[in-house]
Length: 121
Image 1: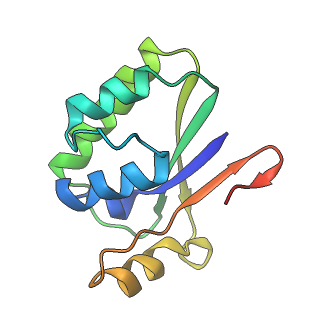
Image 2: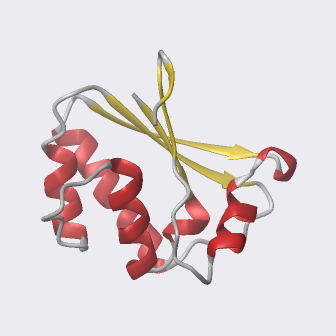
């Protein structure tokens, strides 16, 4: 399974944890902190690629994102079923920023998840 995450949505703790819970299908007991995220990622029992996608014209990442990236990388070292990748998309190929701006006031979440058989619902 491949899950594409919008790096712009991972800059601040509270909205990032809500986005991760929805995007990764984390359990209801997920603690909305980096320790809980690490625990959930190391417990993944099926192959999963998490692709962190950013726009080539994006600004600097936050300090929170840097810590989050370390959690992803540490979890991938511990769990051989987890793979973390990063890619940069051209602004015209990057639909997530617009979706984020459209949903900024209502805290809704846009998710992109695919596996080999196509999009999941």
